[in-house]
Amino acid sequence: MGVRIPPSAFDESDRHPPESHNAPVPIELVIFDSDGVLVDSEPVANRELAALLTECGLPVSAEQAMQWFIGHAMPDVLGIAEQKLGRRLPPDFLDRLQIRTETAFRHELRPVTGVEHLIARLNVPYCVASNGPIAKMRATLGATGLLPRFEGRLFSADHVKHPKPAPDLFLHASATMRADPTNCVVVEDGVFGVRAAIAAGMRAIGYAERTDSTALTLAGATVCMAMAEVETLIRAWQ
Image (cartoon, rainbow, N blue to C red; front, top):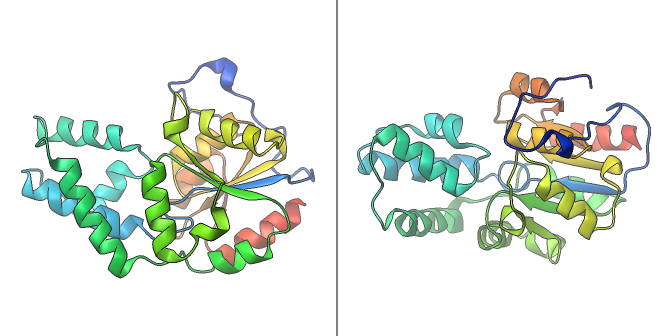
């Protein structure tokens, strides 16, 4: 797609936009984001984050938290929150958040509707690449029963110098999986992830069940509202 990517923190030399999102080229690898794409964690996680921030003096709803923080790595989340709060968060903030979130996940977390069926029908290699830490991915994928499908193919921003929206994470995943970036498809629900995919020279599918479809489109993604549509699009691109 001929969508111009807004300037971001990574070098211009790191950008390799694909010639066409519709060109029929072999798909060697499908890369999934985790939160909001594989596991329906965003509402639960942002509810707990919003509640704790409110207790710390920054009143915020779960909906506002999703708008502010979706797609950001945790250090950036803390920085944004502290900027809005006007002071540092308590030293035990992350520990308290982890306990609350993990407890909620154990009782409430589910796979995104349709994703298990999609994964079972994929006829190409796939992996997961998230700005979140490996420990969180293992916890959320484990709680939903998806971890065995991705064991040994989990990639985190902890592995690279720059998280999304830089292309580093997706390029690291494709190199490890021995796939040409131009033959990779990324399934993302956040603008940062879409920008990272486009910058890496990959095609991006924007999964917009809970996120802004217009923003995903402007970032360069082909938008789908359901996992059945994602499967249809991947097959069409093959």
